[in-house]
Structure formats: structure tokens, C-alpha cells
Image (cartoon, rainbow, N blue to C red; front, side, top):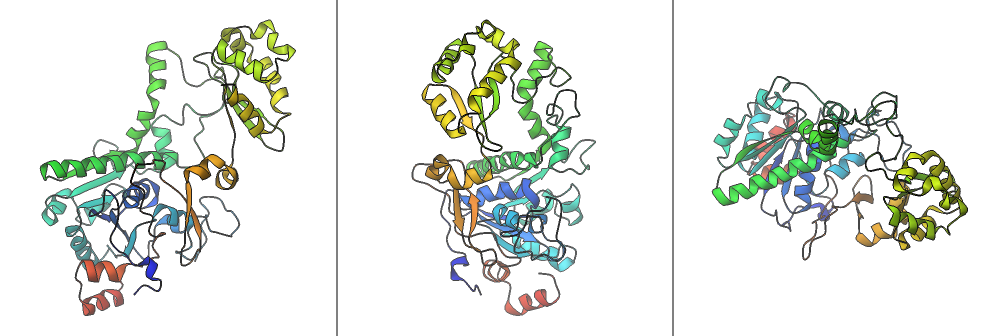
Amino acid sequence: MYLDERRQPGPRRGPLAGVRVADFCWMGVGSVATRLLADFGAEVIKIEDRTRIDTPRKLPLYKNEDARNFGEEVVGADPDKGGLFNNYCRNKLGVTINMRVPEGRRLAERLIAASSVVTENFAPGVMERWGLTYERLRELRPDVVYARMSGYGHSGPNASYRSYGPVVQAVSGLSFISGLPGREPSGWGLSHMDNQAAFYNSAAILMAIRHRMLTGEGTEIDVSAIETGINLLGPVMLEVTVNGRVTRGPRYPAGNRLEHPPAAPHGVYPASGEDRWVAIAVFNDEEWSRFADAIGRPAWTADERFASPQSRWENQDALDEAVATWTSQRDRYEATKLLQEAGVRAGAVQNAQDLNETDPQLAHRGVFFQMDHPVIGEARFEGVPVHFDGMSADNWRSGPLLGEDNEYVFKELLGVADDEFAKLTASGVI
């Protein structure tokens, strides 16, 4: 059944071993949430449709191919080459079910009945059209944990609105506080909230599993990504409501400067080399003295304009120019090491190549690891940023090929007979 026996499912290791997840999630916000469960032993069964494959299978991250814009899809691309999908769906099983036909929905219900957790992050209403309400799921599995993840949540006047990571950032208030002084709000070039909301989703699922262990009862989880974004705005809301300080405007500090408290130097400064930078943060007189000692106390460090935290903050233009004259003559790592040894907060600004190939700290911590893939070959993954004593992630397989585990899941786990399996395959149900 499996051409490579290393991809054959076997007993899982980790605290979530024995938990089976019927995973209807797609894109990032759901897939990253269930990936965390899969990393630590859960048997996550990703459900796809052969004619409407998960979008990350088509997005531009293809190994050994030229870069493309994030939203630029290649028509007819191999669905098993998508690097983003491979990253989102490692350690998962993959099946295909056509949910648009009754036979497909009945098969999905059999899988749900055999699973203890069901996850989805479709636009509100999709699961209902398939008849998969919480009430129906409880009929199939009385103690089911039904984890639903959406932009606005499944109640309220905007529950039916569609969303994506950048939309979530805008509606939650995150985009408004981002951008340059006097310019329009600016979000990020990545769907940051897809990943941020995913961690809330996985935490909610873990709490629901714990609740079921204690009470025997399942629950329905409703996570709103927009409400997750609002949780990141606590300090900003306090500034507005308590101190009356707005978050963006013509006079708002540019770049990496900090307005409250009055910290300076506080920013990113040029280092030697092309497009090389170093970040420095100094908050008080003691740190300023250590900074001045570390750079050899050039004459400008004695300038009266830089004599106190307040005066340094008020004269940031001149101070930044002086700091830049020192940093621009030094390698970013050399400057970082010198300042850190003096007790000053500093760090090289790193790009993707630095993170992957040269950072000794990340290499020591094992942040990145490799797994083989039948189509892509050896591929690199980012690990879980948590270390446990006596426990580690169970990275047993890269992302599933499209429908790779149909036979294993439907025949071995659900008991579908050979003739029925053949009929489901021939009719396009799976």
C-alpha cells in the first residue's frame, strides 16, 4: 500500500497519543492548530477534496523553483509539491472525501464517529450545509470535541462575514496601529493572525480534551481570530483610555523608536555590508553608561543633549545619526557581541538565510529539522519553540500526498470492505 514503508502509520508517541482528530481544516489558522496536536502524538486525519484541494498545495513555495508572489498560483501544478502545505501538515494522515455527494457525507460521518475531536475553519455555514452541526456530531459521538475556528466567530451580526489573515488584522485593530507617521494603516506581508489564532485554537482544544478527561463530556469550541487579535492590543488600549495617547498619527514615532517610556537609542541601525542592520535598545542612564563604555566613549557620548534619558529621547535624530556612525563601521554580529558583553540589549537583524544556515543559537536549539518527502525530497521544517524534559515532538512523517492514506484510514480504521472501497474510488467519492 505504501511504496515507502517509512510513511506507513504506526503507534504514535507523546502526550496526545490515542487522540484521533477528524480534521476539516484548511489554510493556516486551522492547519497550524492541528499540526501542533499532530506533533505531540495525536492521530490527525486531514480531509480534503480532490477537486478543491487545500490552497497551500498551490501557493508559491516550491523547492528549487523561482520565487513567486504569495497569491500567484500555477495552473496545473503538482498538488504534492507545495512546500507550505508540507510544513502545515507534517505528522498528519491525509484522505480525500467528496462532501458534495451523499456517499461522501456518510463516509465523513463514519470517520467522525470514530474520532474524539473534529476541527474546521471554513466560512460559517459550510459545515451546516453538510449537516454537520454540533447536535449531529453529538449523535455520532456523544463526547465529541467540536473545534470551530473562524474570523468573526459563529454568533453575532457579522458571523457570516468571510475573512482572511489581513482582514482579521484590520478588523481587530492591529493594522491601524502599524505604519509610518502620516501614512495609511499598514498590515504585514504575511497572514500573521493565521498563525497567532492557531495557538489559541490548539490551546482551546487541549483544554476541552482535559475537560472531557475530568467529566466525560465533550464541548463545542468557537474561536474568533478577530477576538484573538484584540487580545494583542492590551497596552495600546490602556494608552488610549488611561493616558489619552493615540496610537498613530503625523507625530507618531517612526520606525523602531519607542515613545513611552522615553528610551533612546532605541532602533535599528546600519551595519557594515549591504542591507545589514543591528537593533539596539537603551532605557536608562546605567544602560547608557554601559553603551558608551562599550563603544569606547567617543566625544559625542559626552554631549549635553545626551545627558539624560529625556534629553536623549528629545534629540533622537542627532543621537541616531551618531550611533549609526559607529554601527556602520562594524559587522552586525561583532557589534551585537560587543554590546551584549557590556550588558546592553542588542541583536543582529537576520534574514531567512541567516536563520536557516548560520545562526549558532538556533542550530544548538534544533529549531529547524529535515524530513524526506516522496516528491519534494529532503525538506526543512521549523520545530515547536518549546522544550520539555523527557518529551519531544514525534516528527514521524512529512505532509501527506493527496489521498495518500485513503486505504489505511477507510479500510483499517473504519472497516470499509474492499468492494465498497473500490466503488467509492471509482465513483470519485474518495
